[in-house]
Image (cartoon, rainbow, N blue to C red; front, side, top):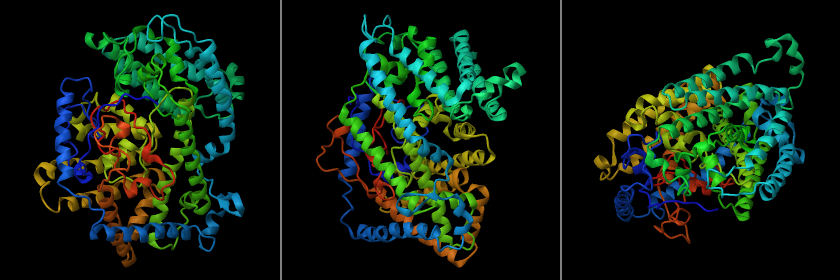
Length: 631
């Protein structure tokens, strides 16, 4: 796969990045995950990169590797004991000999090799049970798409010319309508109506200042109406339309998946608005191929490309419709006009990663029944450490199921010639920074938020305030529930200490202190604990379950011992995550992203190293500086 990546100088030690989150960010609109918006084509980019390069090289050469020190030998022993013990503790909590087993036994199904399987997560069960059908659809779609592109989608002027129609969009739209009718039946009419109204708002508003506001009001209103009316019934509009409610397709609940479509609708309207209000110089060189993934998103499409056909094909694009990953309209059209070279080797690699991740998930849900336990809150009289592991492994399973779902649909699009961002570029246990966590979890949504919410609200200049708006929207977008609002506000609250600490304990002031690395590790422990608590509230145990867990932790001597052990283990984990090493066979500073020094850490492989997320491509529509912290 061919990419246009800028130079990637070697990054400073990780602990410098943790408490120095704003270093090197010269743009007031840099993202809330610490990403620079400097364009690689900017005249200042080369000089800034050179300064960063020399500074980072100095950082690494003045700080020798710690892998062969007595300190790290102790850390290895902690890892060797803690990780297997964590798995054993989680397994004991779901053992048939556990007195609580009968409380959740009814949620288990017959699995492979005589084992029970915990298939009680509704989202993953829907994907797992329908995977054979999805594979069949993909096997039908891909040959048809490529044959249409080869035999029908001929070019007269060249794809880079605005006069050339993108004929592939005809196939995309036709197949998407068939696919969505199979999925949602007559509810396709509701989807089409909403998509059409949004397009009318864009075309009537054009470059008017009220158009973005109207777009947001309409799409947020649709989220609330969809939730309130549960997708609507035709019979509620007129009794003569009741017969249309009889065919709701295989899936039925179209409004659940529509949240992703809402993001695409906003993307089209805002990209169209910015194309009409962009400076003239940014429109002059549109006939050249974009130099980077950032340019594919930021460079406006031709005026002729903002038409209903391309818009509908983008909004309803079958491979990415149900779950994403999210891609902007500009990027989508750019990839059709300037196709990427996606090799068979790359596709085989991603198929292998998906299958390996699927095998990991199957092993885990056969080995421990964390979802069923949390659904029934079946942990009465369990040791406090087991309760903590129930919460932790619930987070791991959530990460793994989302990894599988997003990776499957991304792979489908990739095989069709459309590259969407890889959503999970880090394992859930491979994070010590609250800011870093959100740039590597649902990454395509993170990039969408940066482009369409965070930067328009002021970017880094108002970060301490606009993160509340950002995460309130994130919570509402996921689902309109009080626990998710609590989750969003907890995330915002827990991010603030890292932002404040980054200003107080900056590398410039404290970097020369001999114990600065350990200070950063203490901060990392706090970040990890706060992220775990927030996500357990939102997606695992709920507010009451987390309150009960915290009460048990602080209400007994056993709980205090567990807290102490967790703090030590997380401190060790953070220290190991900080330490980078070059991967063998790769040269530093070659000017190519794929040949750069890759920091290879023990935690890089997540809990037990089976998913291979650490070498996923990092497509970033808003990032143009060094990939700080991505590896």
